[in-house]
Image (tube, rainbow, N blue to C red; front, side):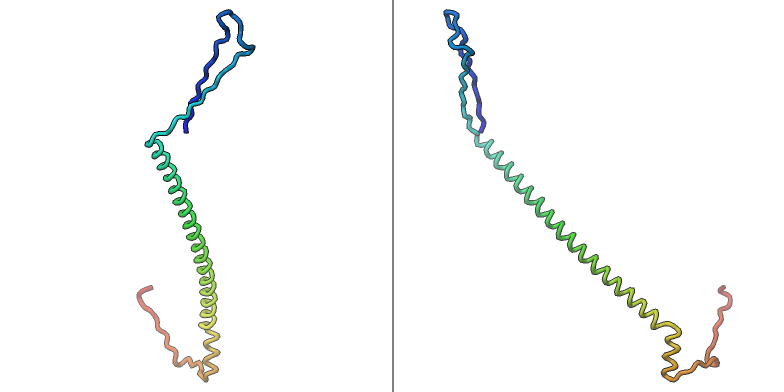
Length: 126
């Protein structure tokens, strides 16, 4: 609420020229001024808007935090999957090596016969 203050200074001298009291006195009068309906509605609307904005900001921050934690989880899953892919690639490279294939062929009783190997040459595209 708004408060208006009035100061009223008493005359320092009387009609006979003497001071009533040394230092003089000041009288303070307070008057309480009421708010109008429109002002009250504006203040209530302002408080409501501030509250809604605060809730919206907090909910957006919470959503951003949740999304950031999901991103972190997905990135860790990606790192784990990339590690597994690297291990499988290494295993495929080992299993497809010439020495291992030659060894498995020997275990199965197969022999290398150079007579069965045919060499194909490309002509004209070099």
